[in-house]
Every structure is written in C-alpha cells, then in structure tokens.
Image (tube, rainbow, N blue to C red):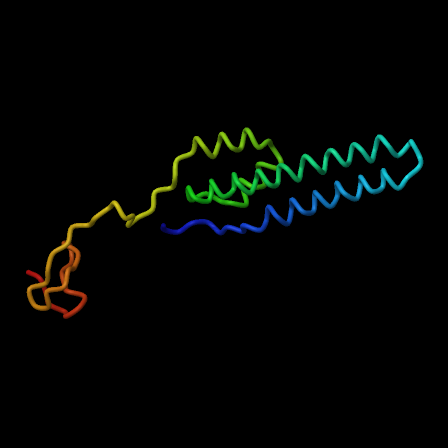
Length: 135
C-alpha cells in the first residue's frame, strides 16, 4: 500500500481507558461521600470523563480511517478528542487518499531483454539481470 504514516492502534484503548478510569473514580468518590457538596463536582467530572472516553473510542475509528488514506493516525485521533468527532469525521471523509507510486493499477512500460528474456523497464539502458546493453 505504499508508505503510510505510523499507526498506534492501541492509543485509543489507552487514552479511552484512562478517561474511563477517571469517570469511575469520580463516580466512586461521589458514591462513597455522604457530603452533598461533592455531588456537583463529582458528577461533573464523571460526565466529562465519560464523554472523553467515548470521544477516544470514536477517535480510534476516525484515526484508522485517516490512516487508511495515508494520513497520520495520531493527528486525527487527537483532533477528534480536542475538537469534535463530527468535525474530524467530516474532514477525514472529505480528504482524498495520498497517491502512492507504483500502485497496483499503475503499470509501467516494460521490454524484454533479448539475451536473458527477463522483463526490464522500457527506459532501461542496461539489463539489471544479465548486463546486456540496449542500443
């Protein structure tokens, strides 16, 4: 498929797990505390971490889609978390894949060496297999 940027497919699991752990911790603090003053901050942190963990899961899917188009997985993963999954998803859907040289549909003109019968590029001056010089 050509040269693609590096992909870390477990990044979404790590970051999403960290956010989910934050949600569980804040919910545990809320349940363990008998103080009603903790209700607002604990529930707020719970919702924030819950939304961020969902964004991380969606970011993994969007990052993978961008990676398949030859773009950076990490950039689109973090854009999803920092911006919005809808905006980043639209960006990935709109961008075109990066063209790679030597794709399967692209056939270069070839010629056959008269000495060894191997196929070499049409612009070759010397056969890379036997050293025959083309005139």
